[in-house]
Image (cartoon, rainbow, N blue to C red; front, side):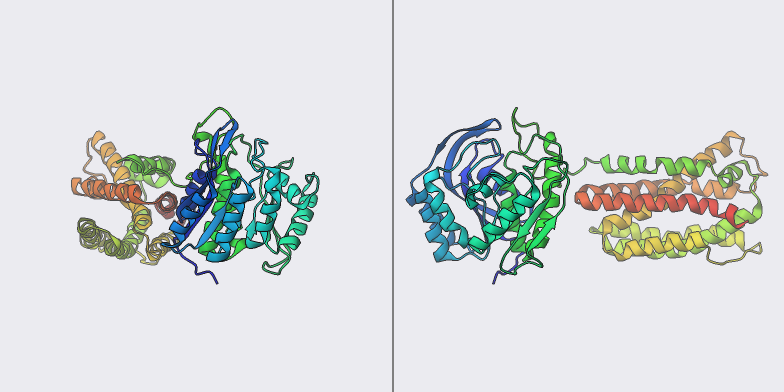
Length: 494
C-alpha cells in the first residue's frame, strides 16, 4: 500500500524536449508545481520545438537501465510517470525494472502520437507497449492513442471515447483517464474509467470548459506527471483528478503570458505562483482597494456634519459610545496580532497599540461621555465588526489579521486628517463642538502609528503566498466596508 507523503518523490521515465514544453522538462515542472520532488531517467533525445518534432535519438537501453538502477538503489520512489519510450527494447527494459522495483504508483502516458500529429512510437513497438499496460495503475492516452490501443478508429464523440476507455480498462485491469481535449465543442470533460471497483463508480466524470488557446504543447505529459504526484500525496484518483484538472485549466489560461515559440506553445506550469510584490506594492494595492470606501465615508451625512460642526450631539454621543465598546474588542485583537507577529519589533508594535487603544483613545471617550447621558448598548454594526475581527484572529494567519486591523488605523487617520484640515481652513472656530476629537485624530503620534501599521501590513503581504495575499485583501476590504457602516450607524440609530 502506498505511503502518502507531503512531498512525494516522483520519477519521470520519458524523453527530453529541448524547448522545455513537453517530455521530462514538462514532467519536472508539473511535479514541482503539484508539490513533489522530481527525478528523471531519459529514454530518448528529441529535436523539437513548438512547431513539431524533427528527429528522435534513442540511447542504448542498457544506459537507461543503469539510470533506473542508480535512482532506485539510492532513493525510495513514491510514484513513477512513464512517457515516451521510443522502441521495443526500451519498453522491455522499463517493464523488467517495474516488475523488480514495484513502485506504489505508476502512471503510464502511452506517448504514441503528439498533439502536432507527429508519430512518436514505431508501430513495431506497439505490441511491447500493450504488454506494459497491465503494470500501470493509471493510463492517460489522448484520443488518437486510445483508438490505437483498442484497435479501433478514433472516437468522434464523448460517448464513443468512454466506451473505448471502458474496453481498455477491461483489457488491462488499469484505471483509464479518458480525456476530451481533442473533441469539438466548448466542453472539455475528463473521466476515470475502471472495471475493478477502485472508484466510486465505473465512470467518474469531471466536467470542464475548453480553454481557448493554441498553447497546449506538453499538456499530456504535464497531466500525467501531475496525476502521479497528486496521487502520491492524496491516495485518491478522483481527488487527484479534480485537483490536477483545476491546476491544468489555470496553466492553459495563463499560457499566453510565457510568449514561448511561434507554434503550439507550452502551458504555464507555475501560474499559481506569483512573484512577491516589491516594497510598497502591496500597500499600494490596499490603498486602491480602500478608495471607494473612503469616498463613501466622505459622502456620509455624519462626516459632513462632523466637519461643519452641525452634527446632532445625540448622533456623536452614540458614535463615541459605540467606539468605546469597539475599542475594547479591538484591543484584544491587537494583542492577538502581537502574539502571532513573527518578529520582536512587530510584537512590540501591536502590543503597544493594544495598550494605547485602551489608555489613550478610550480616555477621550470616557471624558466626553461622562458628562452626558448616553446608552452604552452594543449596536449591530459594532457587534458585526468586532465579530469579523475576532473570527479573523482565530484563523491563525498573522498577515490576514494585520490586513483586517489596518482600516481602523488607516481610514481613521485619512478621515481625521482631512476633517482637521477643513477645520483649520475654517479658522479653527472655538465654538466648534467637536474640535477636541478632530485634533486627537490629526495627532502626529497617531499618524506615525498608522504609517507603522501600514508598513507591517506591506511586509506581511510581501512574505505571503499569492493565496494568502488574496485572503489579506478580502479581509481588508471587509473591514473597510465595516468602517463605512460604522460612521453611518449613528444616522440609522437616530
